[in-house]
Amino acid sequence: MRSGNPVLQGKTFQGPFAVGERMTMNGTVAKTGLLLLLAVVTGGWTWHRFGAAAAAGDLAAALAAVTPFLWGGLIAGFVLALATSFMPRWAGITAPLYAIAEGFALGGLSAVMELRYPGIVLQAVMLTVGVLAVMLLLYRSGAIKVTDRFRMGVVAATGAIALLYLVDIGLRAFTSIRLPFIHESGALGIGFSLLVVGLAALNLVLDFDLIDRGTQQGAPKYMEWYGAFALMVTLVWLYLELLRLLSKARR
Image 1 (cartoon, rainbow, N blue to C red):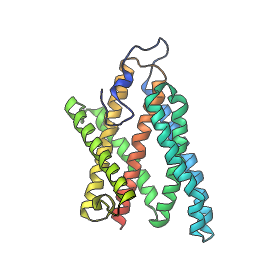
Image 2: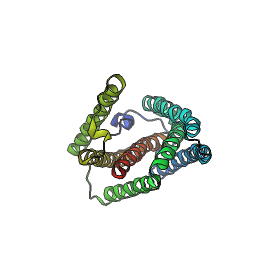
Image 3: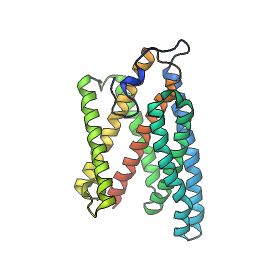
């Protein structure tokens, strides 16, 4: 029952469940759509705020207009993700708040990236949707079979990437050292980004499989919100990695 997604673990579905409505796939899909809609609405608002200031020709004012929402959304999203991970029963409240917070952050970041690389956001969104559709099709068709070995490999690789990013953040915060393959646009950097995008896509498969198991085991209704939240986390990661990959290709 393990998943590469750190907020969607096998223990989430273990233990006795209260009598009542059960988790369904349709319910999870509907709630995922709602979370995505909330993120798009708040992201659109931040995007418009940046664009209105940038249209006046004052880039500094445009950045100042969205920076509080960008960093506030990232910090609030991180806190809400932790809260939801430890308290899945709160997901009906914390998951929508997480989507709203991430929308503010992604809207500001996307607006800045779009100004620097015109057209990049539409490309990243289309690729994210395309990857989601392809991985769902491969999973449903049985082309990708989720075995214990497959799960362990994806989980280990995801943990390694997370550790690498933490090391990079620490080095950049306290030293002048940077890991070039993470940020630079050479062949090695683009290859690394392709690897991470592929890993994020594989995490989608693990999430589909784990949600399937939850519905089959009769998980409680609130787990629909938790499953939707977990998919949202993976999609946000995938979108950010695609933005990074496309920006490296542009450079």
